[in-house]
Image 1: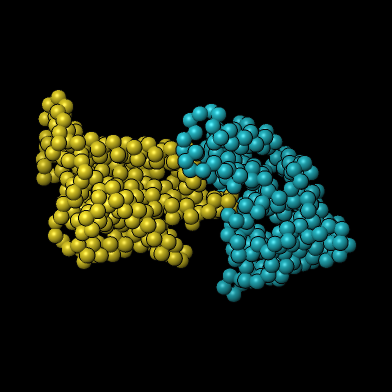
Image 2: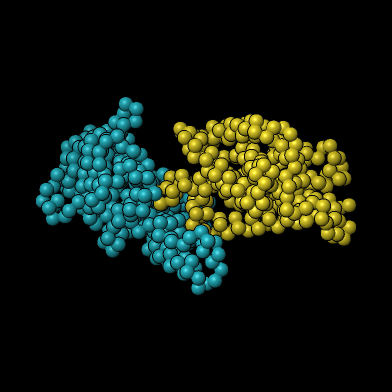
Length: 290
Length: 272
């Protein structure tokens, strides 16, 4: 039982980790938690569904199309709304993201309705391998591999590339970044595109095991946010680990203690982290700017 | 202005009729000046005179209402700050703008940003020591090490800058500006918060930067000793308006400068 719960925990933890990464990427550059993250991912997943179901395209075309759509959506939202904000402070930017959230939710409800769909997926949740006592589906394995791969790519990107370092610099001090030749606006666009891409991956990995409707990402978004707070909003690796920890704790809690109160664990964790280590478990040298 | 000098030395950097207003307040009002190549040009004036505002216009952080800023024959008004950086204009700030959660080394490497050519793919995959990306990185690091040696920053190399003493942070910011290999360097009160000894070092370094690196320097400075020591030309402004411009000797004697800058009481003290 324990092993089985662990497997499920890691699997759902991967989704949380992806959502947390998507959040942290934007937070790192602009200190704004993007509450539209979930809806952006949900819409992108619906786009994949539309390609597959309505246009009858192959998986490759559909998923690539949806990911490209996600990138464009992210860049579009940043460019059209956030950048126009006059003299923005963090609070007003957060409110703008909440506005997107409602807008996108409404759009999805209007276009696809509240009807519950299921997203076909090339990897099945019913093909399984036995791992000792536990059963692991191919989809579980695929989710884990995709997440680890993306994490690795992101790590390299932020650590070693000029654009990645430019993002880090923009977050720490935008004025200094600009006068050193970093195109801060461009950096923000890239950030939103990347974040939206990762969110969409999470959405598409989640949809086959959940039901595809406009509420698809509601719960994972909050969990992903909790995971990011747990691991530290400023660290990519930390927030991803936070996602796994949360997934595992939550599933174990659901298995051994109470299934009904499973979701509460995430919020309990947020509260505890904020009380005892507000910067998150894995955030180093985070100094709050006054 | 000085027409003789103008004939000998064509304009390297010049500001023409620069004006910018915030609400009804004209922070900079019709200011013009020319800076000769490889000279040190200082702007003095009391607090709130508009000195930093002029710098912010040169940098592209502010868009002036009217006027021209000509750098190497090209009007740079309207260009974004990163474009202006690429033209070779670097600066330091009065209230230090560093990447406080990075080390000194990382801060200086960011100063190299415009010179780094490695793309995303080769940057993310430089695992071999001989790869072009690795070689480029080494080249830039060497350049940064030279700056660290020049400014005596060895002890701070791998420390997070946020926790370092104020004077050291000022130097790191200067170092980062140098890492950009500027043609024109804007220094906004570089000696603020430094003790006499540190100021003495700073004067030498600024001289070195001018002489050895051939950088033209635009300086805002409150310490009159520093200004008079190193400036080739000085512009005095007050309330955003031009007062006088000339050599240190000329400016020092100008009655309006004495009045605006030192206050009436001090004139009496000085003459007494």
